[in-house]
Length: 156
Image 1 (cartoon, rainbow, N blue to C red):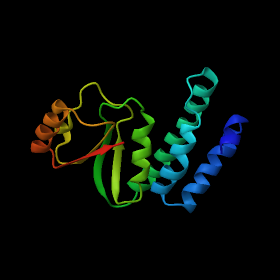
Image 2 (cartoon, rainbow, N blue to C red; image 1 turned 60 degrees about the vertical axis):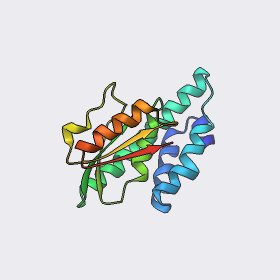
Image 3 (cartoon, rainbow, N blue to C red; image 1 turned 30 degrees about the vertical axis):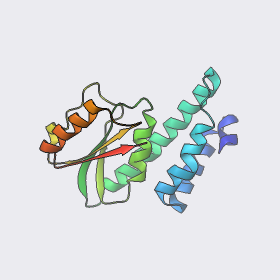
Image 4 (tube, rainbow, N blue to C red; image 1 turned 180 degrees about the horizontal axis):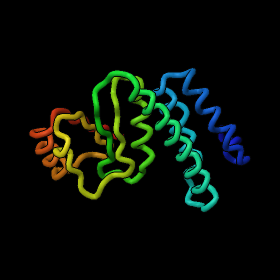
């Protein structure tokens, strides 16, 4: 996959990711393939950053494809968003791990400056974050949990 990316064979890379998605459970695809692949293109050099954005675009497209398939099946409506998260693609990777599980996920593609899950209090919420929660974040979670039907924090 990395070779396809470096050689600019984007369509071949896209096809390979879609093929792997049919052969392996999506959580394993994320853990053992996509995250390690992204880590190999993480240097702060313009060329490498461009390759990473191309890879992220393919990941987002594949996740969207899987999410659309889930919308055709019965399931519970839910939201997934980043919360104090700098890597927006992690939202999509976490959404991908949850596809095929009777959820109809709506992705907030980038973490909003101020999140208001109480607007859709009857839906399940997944919040993707990094690091240890601060006292202020824990307090905010407690407030949200008082008004939202279900809220799960995914700490990377």
